[in-house]
Length: 353
Ligand code: BMA
Image (tube, rainbow, N blue to C red; front, side, top):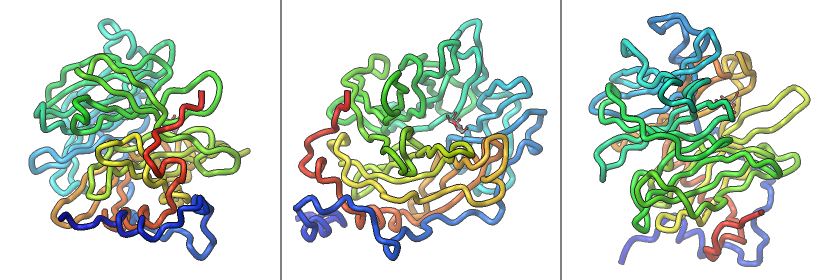
């Protein structure tokens, strides 16, 4: 018999009458799960070997004995490219590759005319390569493009996989039910911008699109628009997701971060979703920059030995910062979050169409 997981233990004691999903009382409010690194911001534009406007929103991975960040660098014309930075401790002594890994090539890839932005890196053991999901900024709006690499020195474009407008995409690291899975965020003409999941037999042809996680409404911190952060992380309790939620205010949008947990073999089933945000702009470098009040994680690295998860994020669209958390603390927190009754029995994602 296998050991019961945290969720098995909690499920046995949960109310079944739909009284869950409520907002927590102030005394239950979320503790600080993430700790900002004292050296934050860990990368600023002055460290780059060339002049640029800003550096932010990095994808992240552990490649051999180095942490690799795929940085979004916005140049002084406003167009972004993706630049590699390497460090052995993932905090200091960043070395920048001599040339960007992915620079817009509008003559050959017209969808990149206004830039390559916000990479998410997923290692695929089956293919023994990394797949980079990034936003190509086309004349018709942002869309999802894929590229592949083994070493972040050479890269092979796989091309656009979702038409505009669509962004915030990342692959799961393995096939499920024989197919590759991708989470992404289309922006519909009407209604809210939810997170969707799509499937592919070959990573080129994508279908069976369904809504995975809905933006909430009204006053919620994640009302109207949400998007995936780093790629889904496989854990004992399910796929851990980190996502950003955008709250519109008279003073402009605020980008904050929440967590969710998907069923391991049926990831369209959302087991848990944090009620409150777990990370929000509060440090000066997060509150003020080219775009104020933004924390935007799209990379994380788990140290299997210590169980510490390093979350790399863009701060105010102006610098790169790092916050760490114990993976078990994140899972404990989610497992204590009331479940969503509609999804309890694995009845699939709703299609609010
Ligand atoms: C989102 C993305 C991010 C950016 C954020 C805040 O729409 O474009 O790249 O960090 O807005 O400006």
